[in-house]
Image (cartoon, rainbow, N blue to C red; front, side):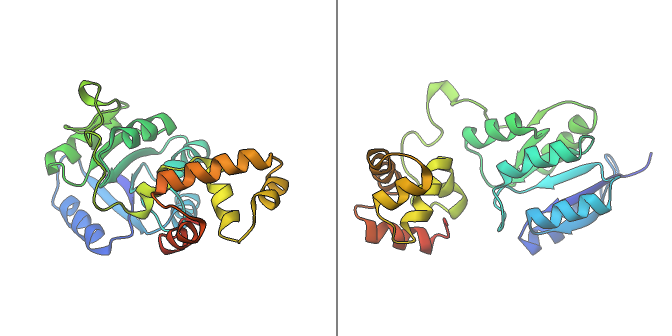
Length: 222
């Protein structure tokens, strides 16, 4: 049986090298990584040039695009390719959204090697695979974090807190535009902009516009 042709999309070079070495010594399933990409744009170009690619290993935290948004784009243009999310994020919200968007499997980097191999087997057989320990709904009706906020949240996690409209408002706020100017540009009322501004500050844990702009720029949210 021929090897499964795959592309690995992850910005961490050491991780890519490790996974490539792992599959080089794996007999069943036989996986050949024929490409390594570090961005969403790189993946799109690769798939256009290598239409026979069977499997994509995809991290969610990419430098140029949210991995969750990328999944349906891949699914739309490359219908036959299988997508396994291979990432550090285990929150049930990300798992559920990735599968809803068209991913075939979801595995976290802390899972066991055999979980990864089993995921490849299941996905290539046409099944959906969720690695052990992951959920698509809150386990026992509770959030995975038990309501506690992590002491450290990276840019990807922070961005997931905001809606698409809140992202639009935030971008205009960082351009030093007031509520009236933002309202005019987005065709909404001043009051609605004010509500969005308050919600953004609450979600990001800042108390004034100056700190909001500083936080947004430091975390590359815009």
